[in-house]
Figure 1 (cartoon, rainbow, N blue to C red):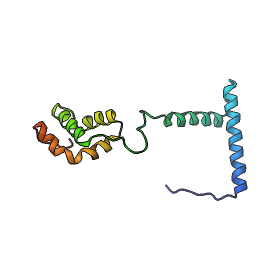
Figure 2: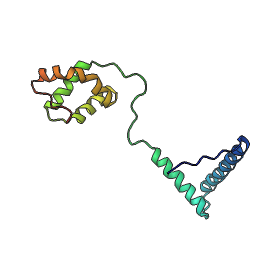
Figure 3: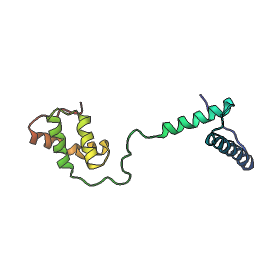
Figure 4: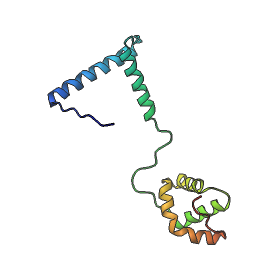
Length: 131
């Protein structure tokens, strides 16, 4: 599907945007006052706005932005190896560490990568890989 681009002057754009804002503000006032939405267009706009808002609600908390907190990569590799030895999957072990230290699972995976062989040697089992 190709995208169609419309080019309008700045004045026309401002006029259209103003009309849209005015329509939506009026619609919001009517909803707040309890007035019925009788126009199919008004009902569609209201339902679409509610659906868009619902879709924007995150299903879980966002991870912290910015630099990752410092944690001992070797120690966490050992925690990972012990978790795997106790039956956790790769994803479960990473998730537990990520939640505890407050970083993404990908950050944990990258941080412990070079320490995994030694950690599994210490635990006394072969590295089962990422299954």
